[in-house]
Length: 372
Image (tube, rainbow, N blue to C red; front, side, top):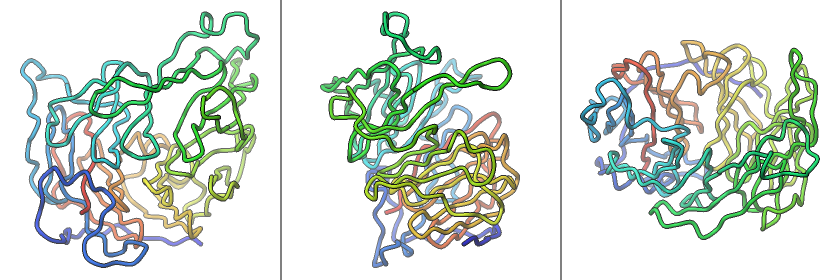
């Protein structure tokens, strides 16, 4: 079932008094009574953004930015705070990549980043309080003597960290051809390269399948999908695309509890394309459509709302246009070009837009927010 919601501009209604940055530790907590869908959950507040090299907090959607991380001396033309793949954990800590390492940042001290360890990628642990850092070695040395597809160029190791900076006590090296992507209640999720396929032009692409690994990450114990690529993961849900599908809806959602895949809901604006993002619960999936509109899909109720948000998305990829953060059941979008800040309630599709755009010169980022 597809529904359409048009963008409107309203001010946020807050629940209770504004609290300090310390409340970011509780992302999924509502205030007052509400039903199981969380329709009475208050709007996000204490929104943390990186605006061209200055970290600021917005007490609410329309508040003036309060700079808590001023531009460091000597960084007038650079963004010393910028993170790659920033995400807020359920604990409230902000984690991202900087200078070939994974760092953790307390929202109350945005200028102090704790280096956890070297990494080329990372993903949260299932408890939402820890994380896995991913490092790699060249296959030529790490996989010497093994017969592998030519698209296997790296062997991966994952190390589990607390955000305090304590050394990792758990480190697992995966077999060659397996790339770790997520942590689930049933084990680590990985993509396994099974061969090489003809790509565009004269090149080749990896032929892959999605698998669950055993506790030692030494072998796959279950294949979730063959000839498939992972789009997004959260909690116990995996969004994946069928690599041999050439038309129609090629996107599926796998539920680890149900142990089955289902097509994502159909949308009025067409099929989902590009990269999307799941909320912390794994229920709501935000993605752009072939119409270049944004949609939020309710994977529990098999519905889709076409939000008709403008300006249109760039490059068929939500992350190329917006800084994106889930705050409880609200999706926050910061347009990196215009400075427009928008919040979308996934439960009732209410859309609130900041009255005055934020000042954005180059690119901006949104790191997280609180909802309690």
